[in-house]
Amino acid sequence: MMKRQKRDKHERAFSRGFQAGIHGKNQDLCPYSDQSLKSEWLGGWREGYDDRIHGVKV
Image (tube, rainbow, N blue to C red):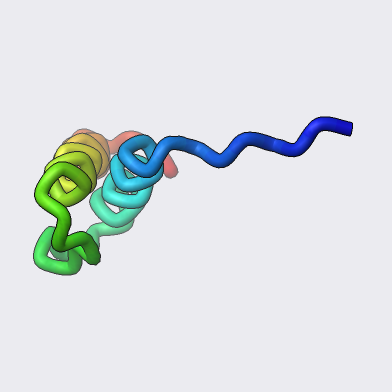
Protein backbone atom coordinates (compact mmCIF):
# COMPACT_ATOMS: atom_id res chain seq x y z
CA MET A 1 0.00 0.00 0.00
CA MET A 2 1.32 3.44 -0.93
CA LYS A 3 1.66 6.16 1.65
CA ARG A 4 -0.67 9.07 1.08
CA GLN A 5 1.30 12.12 0.01
CA LYS A 6 0.95 15.17 2.26
CA ARG A 7 -0.77 18.13 0.67
CA ASP A 8 1.28 21.16 -0.24
CA LYS A 9 1.66 23.69 2.62
CA HIS A 10 0.20 26.47 0.50
CA GLU A 11 -2.81 24.40 -0.49
CA ARG A 12 -3.38 23.53 3.17
CA ALA A 13 -3.09 27.20 4.22
CA PHE A 14 -5.63 28.22 1.56
CA SER A 15 -8.01 25.46 2.61
CA ARG A 16 -7.78 26.38 6.29
CA GLY A 17 -8.35 30.04 5.45
CA PHE A 18 -11.38 29.11 3.37
CA GLN A 19 -12.83 27.13 6.27
CA ALA A 20 -12.27 30.04 8.64
CA GLY A 21 -13.98 32.45 6.23
CA ILE A 22 -16.99 30.28 5.52
CA HIS A 23 -17.52 29.77 9.26
CA GLY A 24 -17.45 33.52 9.90
CA LYS A 25 -14.11 33.68 11.71
CA ASN A 26 -12.19 36.94 11.74
CA GLN A 27 -9.31 37.26 9.26
CA ASP A 28 -7.10 38.45 12.13
CA LEU A 29 -7.06 34.84 13.32
CA CYS A 30 -4.60 33.88 10.57
CA PRO A 31 -2.10 31.53 12.26
CA TYR A 32 0.74 32.09 9.77
CA SER A 33 3.63 34.52 10.07
CA ASP A 34 5.36 33.35 6.85
CA GLN A 35 4.27 35.91 4.24
CA SER A 36 3.53 33.47 1.41
CA LEU A 37 1.50 31.14 3.65
CA LYS A 38 -0.30 34.11 5.20
CA SER A 39 -1.16 35.34 1.71
CA GLU A 40 -2.60 31.91 0.79
CA TRP A 41 -4.61 31.74 4.03
CA LEU A 42 -6.04 35.24 3.47
CA GLY A 43 -6.94 34.38 -0.13
CA GLY A 44 -8.81 31.32 1.10
CA TRP A 45 -10.45 33.36 3.84
CA ARG A 46 -11.70 35.93 1.30
CA GLU A 47 -13.19 33.21 -0.91
CA GLY A 48 -14.83 31.50 2.05
CA TYR A 49 -16.16 34.78 3.40
CA ASP A 50 -17.58 35.73 -0.02
CA ASP A 51 -19.26 32.33 -0.30
CA ARG A 52 -20.75 32.76 3.17
CA ILE A 53 -22.10 36.22 2.33
CA HIS A 54 -23.61 34.96 -0.92
CA GLY A 55 -25.37 32.07 0.80
CA VAL A 56 -23.26 29.09 -0.21
CA LYS A 57 -24.12 26.19 2.11
CA VAL A 58 -21.33 24.58 4.10
